[in-house]
Length: 93
Length: 93
DNA sequence: TTGACATGCAAGATGGCACTTGCCTATTGT
DNA sequence: ACAATAGGCAAGTGCCATCTTGCATGTCAA
Image (cartoon, rainbow over the protein chains, first blue to last red):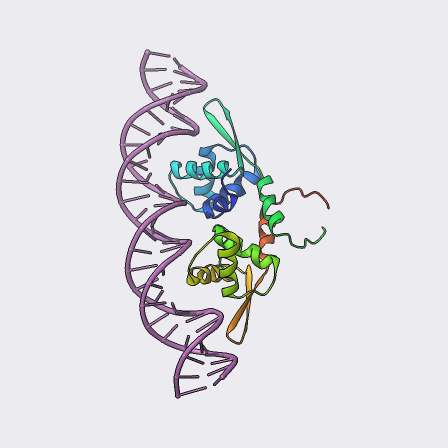
């Protein structure tokens, strides 16, 4: 499991996490479209694919193949390590 | 305020945060020593200084000059952005 | 089977980050 | 004043991450 800090270091990957956190189960093409349309980021399909691979290695994204499509899901659990490592007060909502 | 994600991306900087979170108010030389002695990281003083500058720009470290020494303090507040951006369930302690 | 669709693999170019080196400034003590 | 201490600035180097390009693999529909 690669470190999540490196995965979060890239702005494009953070936007991808935003997209996946919003609506679940998006494909590579859908994410490419979302990046271009809604975030003004225009990159090749492979660039997005490589970003998703980094996120998956870090455990922040899980995938599920259905047919020729691959659906991506946000998995927030690895983020808990950050709070475990540097705990700080939380306003008890 | 530079982004905290880039600041967290480097392993040395994370160890520095660990050191500062443990005991407050350390100087550059003290941190250099801690890196070498307790973590097996042997780097030049400038390397550590540049890491501290990145952490300070990200708001994760605040400094206070006293005489010719500069004391560094861990400031965890910026980390809250991560939880705000991707909220996930926390075991209600 | 043939073509279109969705994705994967691999090699190359570019830019940025981490680290070093050398010199400089500021503070303290004698 | 002088030396020693603590730290800062700036240029240079090497490497890694990101991105692109081109081709390959697997899936579905007609």
